[in-house]
Image (cartoon, rainbow, N blue to C red; front, side, top):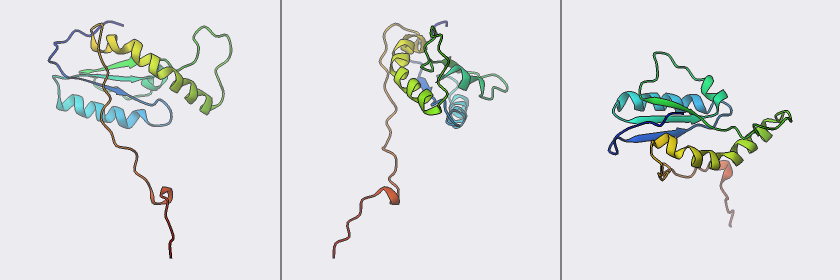
Length: 136
């Protein structure tokens, strides 16, 4: 994979999509909207090769680069992949930190870079998840 050469001032956004279920498609739609609104920014969309292959790519990707990441299954293993979706998810999650560290220089086009997660809030608590106290 070739390194992207960009100026230090050029903003870069990396999206990491969970490759199971339909999680990648809505995030990809957001990435496309941001890419259209910020044509001077570089965007990287990371997910497994299988997940990336399922995304719509009409009219090119412009300033979005698709970056495949490991799905967690050992490449050199002769064993068949796990049949259980839960096992596949577990393997992917276990491989994710190493995949991101290995790809950081490739994504950013320079040898040393720090990844900063986008600030987020904890998921909302639903009424059925709250503890309630029934005091007289």
